[in-house]
Image 1 (cartoon, one colour):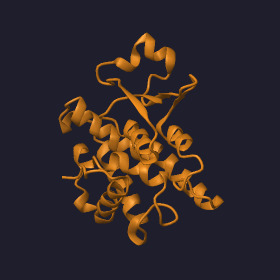
Image 2 (cartoon, rainbow, N blue to C red; image 1 turned 90 degrees about the horizontal axis):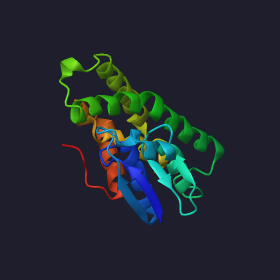
Image 3 (cartoon, rainbow, N blue to C red; image 1 turned 45 degrees about the horizontal axis):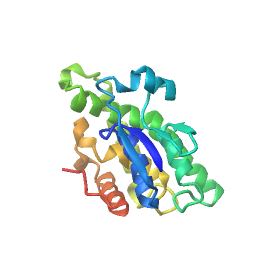
Length: 198
């Protein structure tokens, strides 16, 4: 049994659930509220000093954090990780980009709007163009392909869809990025998810 400490409003945490569900990995979900400071308690920090979710605990007591690291571990040896070395490197490229350039824009703006209930005027104005640039990059990449790597579902798609499917909650209308919108629906279908798009 995999124990997942996660916030169900977090795309990063949902990535772990997507992978566990796909491979039939039984999990115990322990809800940890980020907004109300539950990741900053002494008990949680003793488990994960970075104070972040998701954090998972395996049956043998080992602890692993960071959503993409958890996904990589759970998907080891599966078809979600390309077997060809260059395709695998491309998958890593998008995993790193997702955490550095995508999540730091779309997820952050969504967090301020949806969870902190800030008005647009209260949110850093640099976030919106950063979100749009990230979606522009995705739109361009998807202009002649259906998936991010090797024309089949990989961890790159799962990492990127986690927050892109909630882009409207960050104030972004994916109608402006039709390739991205179609890709979101495709990946949600592949994962057996009800679409989050409006």
